[in-house]
Image (cartoon, rainbow, N blue to C red; front, top):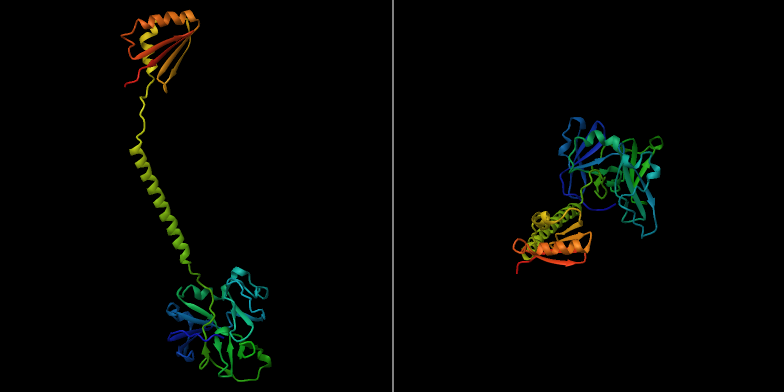
Length: 307
């Protein structure tokens, strides 16, 4: 197993639902047993590093000789050996021994740990005992939950021994054993800061886009002020002036064109149009704002533009 060490003074071992052991941890990784307490009567929030026994965990090892093998960090290498569904267990990252071709991984049913998870700090680190305790220097056996374990130099991990076939002495606790915190459970998933950074980036880009878009509209409006049109049809005023001069039943239709500021009278005959044109020309003082023209049965009034 790995050789990294944690700079901490206390390590806690959850042996069972009613047994919590407290250890002092030397810089060398050696554990010094202090005392046992009832976890239901202990303030678990003060715990920052906790190892859990085989009472709560399962694990397995596999030899993979392909040195290029790199499993996904979220994969459960031994899912087929678990009776629990994927979302019902906590897992560790797959871990390879630095000295052999063996890979290992641990998993813990959530329902076994849930009573304790409600009262612990989210800053806690939880380790599988079977994959982080090294007893090779003591060359001894210890009991972890219902199992009897000892270090295996062949795989660099742990052997499981059956109690009915066992006749060696067993250590009462982990006093003198070495703790190697190379593998921990994924309990509280940390939010990736890249997601938060990306969200803030998108928000800032949106604000900048809206600001520039608004500023651009203001500049365009200042440089190119909109053309304002009178909200009326000037031909209606013309019609009010000359309608009394138009005989009944001689007009086919009247067309107002606000875009060109013109009014077109279409008569039933060319003669009617000609007579009306001559009549309208007599109103030169009253209709001095208009240019009048006649073609066939059409008389057109176009309002004069100011120069």
